[in-house]
Image (cartoon, rainbow, N blue to C red; front, side, top):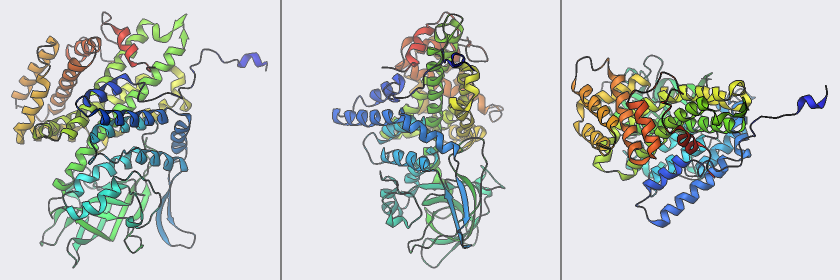
Length: 551
């Protein structure tokens, strides 16, 4: 063929070489806002830390790591060449490079640093845009800290390893490693989210706090980790009571703990990460917290990973929006760049609103963790499950619409959008699917009146600034006052709570054109059933411009 037929024109260039943090106005402005009262030295340190991570995330090298980790998924090696049972998971080197960079950037170290949760949330948001699968062990390692703190002895032993900035691959005794990763095993095949139906049993040994576990875990994510928090029925009192345990992968003397990996799950997305079924058969474990209080012990870990579901979904949404805006900026059709055409501008503005609302909410929750006051803890009790429900639900339709902005190019694996789309449903399922979150909100409303007061006080900070927000708050109060059929209406109630909270945050902190468009569409009802149906009279151009890569 003549070479002229292969001249490439009207294609968007590869999006590399940018600062993922600094080029995101919503994220960088949000971090600065929550650091406003911090010491200048701390603010400068956080800014430098996130800028370095943002530049790494935008590099060609990091993007290649993400591609390779997904093109070469983990492999289970149950036995060595001699027939010895080893139960090891083999990963591509790119997986280890992603994890090493995440740990080195402090993404498992939030609980003891100034502004630790805010800087860690922003970092997790940035680095997850490179590749989301490795975020699973990063998240669980970070979230294990508050559960272990119920036992000061265990916390003293394990917390320095969990919060270390050093990543060491390979299975060795934890005491011989500068840093470790944690996984979690809660669900079983007969119960799923109903963990009280678990049948794994824990038989006490003579040594205080030590048990042997026998049972099967239906989902055990990141089985290559150094330790796991699991739930099992302890029986030392003569009756079975659900209890939390720490299961090390390798025992202090160097022998492998009994940890039979039966198979790796063949998943829709999250393919770079290994999720498995495991068997415990006389597996040594150490009790965490009091016997019979397993759910209460592990609940802080669950809350932290639920927040990471919000951050992770917001990160996916931002990456999808970035790719859509970049493509339409460089792709022309019918005589003009796509981004300048009115209907595409409407679509992009709608996607930008969804992304900004999710990002702003995620940062607000992280800042509440740092504040750690009674008021903020009460606020988080409702805000985390409500945000987890809504933001993760919005992720999949938004990523699908962003993919469509690239047309047929977006449906091709090389664009990266199919990987984002496969990943997008995960966070809605992980750590309790939609119904679990909605019912958890109802439980908090019924049992913890301080949580509702704290939530309403937060929302009320914007009262009077926008009539559509005021009307939505009034409607929510009416909804909450009507207890008839409340369980069947739980999703409706929680959706409204999340939207009102997002609206309040945007009215207070976002540019007027963003807050106006959000309130008109999400709260005022001037919106269709698909993205790209915003009122044409809004300042859509300014909304799109804010979403483009800054700099």
